[in-house]
Image 1 (cartoon, rainbow, N blue to C red):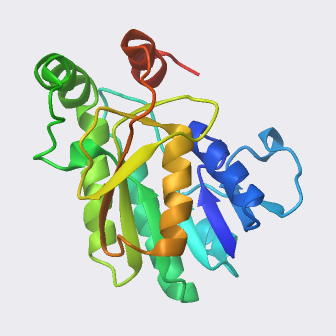
Image 2 (cartoon, one colour):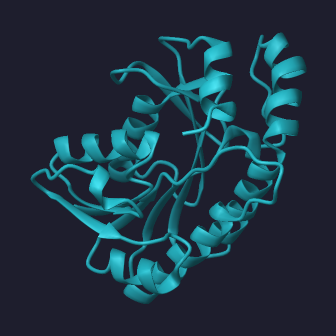
Length: 230
């Protein structure tokens, strides 16, 4: 399968691109910074801003599916990256007749998501980090989900919990709407997306993903994912 990966240069996008190539897919890596992606068999680099409709249209021509791993950091200012890119991507897919879309969102987009037994997370970290520091980011994720839901594409909204780095794919769980857990390794997130691409268990719904085998250092996760500038 020939797959377009948006955000291929990002933390999750790099895992997604590498795993897709290892599985035998052809990958069109859509990025604004092409020099950071080394040449690999099966990899084509397309330079495009995901919010630029014309550039996106050209980038995905000839692909069979689109996977979005786009992301941005917390900001007090309004964020539009998710919703604007979703608009450009879905319009380009409709133009080219490409039906399959998987886009990373967040468990926070489910208003009823409360991980079982996670008292400190539910009552301290979630209100402080997700609902306050990440408020504008998650507001735009919800707008992105609305844009995608309004299309007639075969979409899947992929909702991880707190993302962290881990060197390999581990045990993970998926569930409709959101999954019961606090953390998701990026390797597992990428693996779940590629599996869903083949299995199509969550078409036109949301798929929660959580890692069950390992846990990150919480302080380090907050710093790396929400505070540290790169």
